[in-house]
Image (cartoon, rainbow, N blue to C red):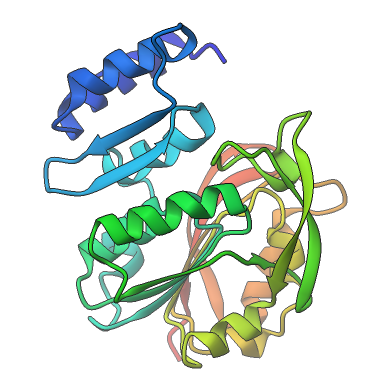
Length: 266
C-alpha cells in the first residue's frame, strides 16, 4: 500500500526519534519489497522496550501508535485508576497495548485476548521478552457471544488485519472463543479498564453481554468499525445502560473511529 507523503515523512521521523535502532529499521522498511527484505522487525524503544513483529504493514502500525504516538492517551485512560488496576486487552494483536500499558503502570495486571494463532505467537514473545509474564496473561482465544469455538479468518502474517478486515486469500480456521462475562471471571471478577480493537467483531462481543457484566469497569477505549446493520449509536446506548459515558470521540470515517468512555460519577 502506498502511503500519503505526509504519513511517510511522519513515520520516518518517528522511526528515528522513538527507536534507538531507527536507522536499521528504516533500512528494513525500505527493503521490505526487495530481495534484501527481512521477514521480521525488532523495534527497540529508547526506554528499553523490545517489540518483534512481522515486516508487514498491518503488524507495524500498532508499534507506532503505542510507542511513538501515545494513540490511546494513557494518562487520560488510566491515570485516575488504582495503581494495581486490572485490564482486559481484547484484540491484543502483537501485544503493543498490553506491553506499553504494563510498562507505564508497573502494578497493573492485564489479560490479553488474541484470536489469531499466528499473531498470538508474537503477543506471547513480546510479553516474555519484556519481562512481563508475571503481570500480562495472554489468551489465544477469540471474544464472542458464546463459549466454545468459532470460524475465524486469519491472514497468517501476524497482522492485526484479521477477521472481518482480513485480506482476500486469508484462511478460515476454527479457534476457541469466550464471552466478556467469562473473561471478567477469568481476571478475578473485577476489571477496571477495557480496551477493544477487534476489527468489526466488537458488536458481537459487547451487545450480547449484559450491562451488569461491566459493573466494575471504570474506563474503556475502543475502536469501532464499519459493519452492515450496525453503528456506533448501538454501542453508545449499551454503554449508557452500563453507566459509562463518552468522554472523547475521534471519528475517522463513517462507521469508523475511536472512543474513550468513563464511568459516570454516582
